[in-house]
Image 1 (cartoon, rainbow, N blue to C red):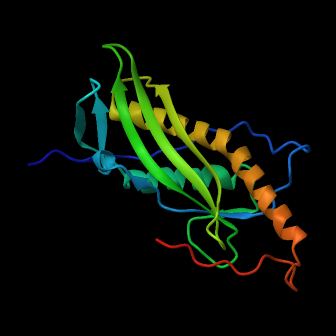
Image 2 (image 1 turned 135 degrees about the vertical axis):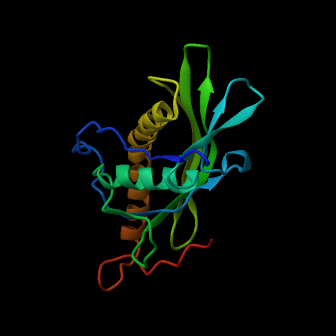
Length: 205
């Protein structure tokens, strides 16, 4: 009989617990977080670890509960939705969406630095697009590591959760700033009769 497969999810640690300061632009736009693409070597629900610079290995019977692209996207949505920087954050498209966040998971792995030091490593490229014109509004690549409390899939899930919280906390203000410029540009144009942006075009695949 084959061993049982163990499934792991991420749960973002509590954030700073602070709304954007009064000096920052007020939330003005809605955001769609699309499924992240995943680099081929990492496009696998099995958790990956690396003991050297050149060799990737997989934990057998220890898997993410969903594919890495969906795992990361869901975590970003959850973090952004409670950050206070956006009017709303969705995973499903509708015509009122103002901007689309998409990107690519370039690495999601446990890195064994020494016999007693291990870290979760996330390399993630993000870009923000105007949902109506598809103009790029912002882009950035994050390359982050966080120590594991223990060398295990459970430790990897916990450290990955912390890394994703860091991405949310750092990127949310930058995304909001890009969206505030979009809102200001729209406000300078002749507004639609209902005061909202013109209907957005559905983003391409």
